[in-house]
Length: 115
Image (cartoon, rainbow, N blue to C red):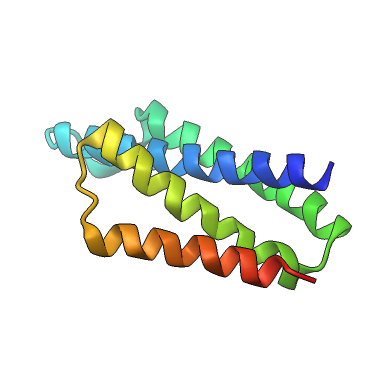
């Protein structure tokens, strides 16, 4: 159950970041509106807040089940998934340094999660 909740938490964090990126595109595309109105009329902004809020609730449950020092590094998997999603959804580039960094994160998660 712990790993299912952790996966849900990570997925919600990734979804939240994607929504916030889409929100920023909306905000930049509607410069004719006052800034606060651009947020108020931005469904992506609300979706991102909802995803992060839900992720926080799930995260608190995860923390009740395992040591913070064991599960917190696993959240860095979200960085990897966001990089991959950004490549496919927004056409952002992944260069050799990014890929090496992704493998370093994977290795770090493996090492830190060992008991």
